[in-house]
Image 1: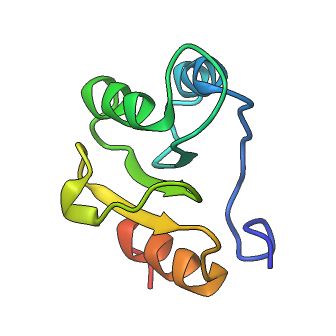
Image 2: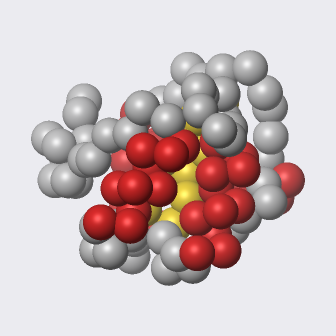
Image 3: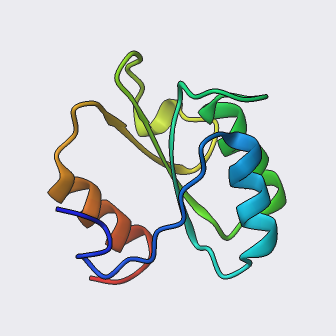
Amino acid sequence: MSLENEGFIVLEASNADDAIDILNTHPEIRLMFTDIDMPGSMDGLKLAAAVRDKWPPVKIIVASGHRQLSDELLAVEGRFFSKPYDHARVITAMREMLGAT
């Protein structure tokens, strides 16, 4: 199941710096999905905090195969998924966060 097949437009970033560049050039973005552990100048949690501060309307989903967090422990208002995650649950969460059922 791919996000594109579910009707989402996907822009991929290889690291946090790329993600910030994409957000700067695509103000229409309303949701970001990030992994905690990724290369670059910051990890996914720091990226999530930066996005929260600079682009408050952007909803955030954080995932990790190495750490266990709950939605309440995130430093941002968002959702956490532990890998391997159920793709259907992620799609449902994305639709709920974007206000589309």
